Image: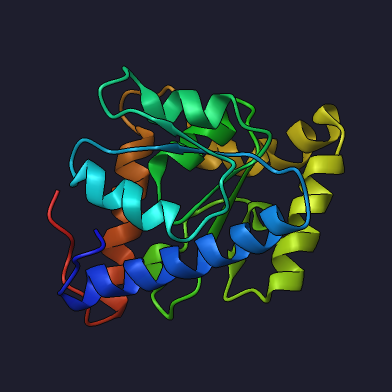
Length: 184
């Protein structure tokens, strides 16, 4: 939300500003195209304007009214880049490559993903190098590398769902810090 005012939302907004700054640097030196799934839970026009002001012109927006827009964006991307999002975790479980980034001090915004798919307070060079590594990695090597870690987060056991594991992770982080649990 570009109009964020509470501390947690401002932290997330700063994360997104840095993520888009890094992506924009990549776009200025390559033919990278960016697909953004807009959320119906936010002011879509405001968010679109905010994103367009930070990225070069090669941006494709998936409408919030498009069914499963986020999943379609993740599934059609070479690499999905984002912050704390279950869509990234679920995308990896479906065989997609992602890079979750956290520029803050909040562990809550660092997803339980395999280390190769997560960067905490990276420099632009670390970000660029990780994207290059992920994009050059053969599919079979990528699948083998992340399989065990992803099985720990995603499974089909109805008694141990992925959303429960992620909520447990959030609860543990909140218990270790002074953070208030986000509303669900």
